[in-house]
Amino acid sequence: MNKKRYVISINQFANFYKGTESVKKRIIRQQKEPNKFLVAWYQLPKSRIKKSIENNCDLEPILKGIEELKLRQPQKPRQVLDRAVSLEALNRYVNIKLPDLLKSVPYEIIKNVEFNSITIKGVEIIISPDVIFRLKANGKTYLGAVKVHISKSNVFDNIQSRYISSLLHKYLKEVVAQADEEVLEDLCLSIDVFGEKVISVPKNLSKSLLEIEVICEEVKSIWNVA
Picture 1 (tube, rainbow, N blue to C red):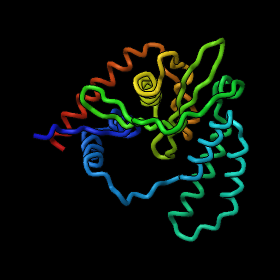
Picture 2 (picture 1 turned 180 degrees about the vertical axis):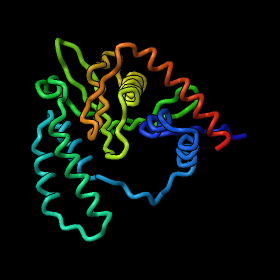
Picture 3 (picture 1 turned 90 degrees about the horizontal axis):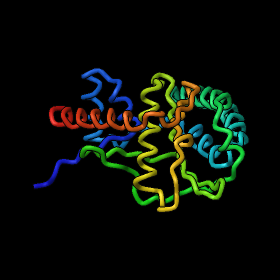
Picture 4 (picture 1 turned 30 degrees about the vertical axis):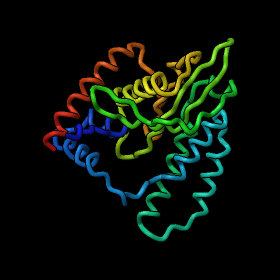
């Protein structure tokens, strides 16, 4: 008999935590049967923000993205909305203060990691960081990662963002880090563009992970009835 597989993406996990009972059930139904034809929104700001972070937080990709969007002449209502929100997202990102370490220390971008998820209490959480980096400082090698959230109508609160940075930390530690590499808590970052905030791993990481375990148990219980 096949073992039941519980799978949820990191952003939907954050939404699940905050959701009402009906929202939680809807999220689980979407995770059970993902829509293969779902159109991805805000692709340009996502790719430009990622490129900016990969280049030591250089704002040139952001500014070029703004210019490109200004020149676009969208025809359909969806394209008009995507352009307007994408422009606002890039302009807001410019105001976000990222850690000085990301601007001052050169780092290597890690790509093609074999696994993009971790399993907690039997629930597979798809992490898929937008950027994973390795940097050297004081003779040590450190790892960090970033997850970017762009949604004007669904800004993550501090607790949701802390869960995301905690999960990034656990993912790096379990999946990416080599024996001589240390995961830097200050560089596991949940960036909420419309919230204009950057949240790193909370001081009490173990408490955050225990709360995540409780949410995973709830994911399973609703999965079985949704």
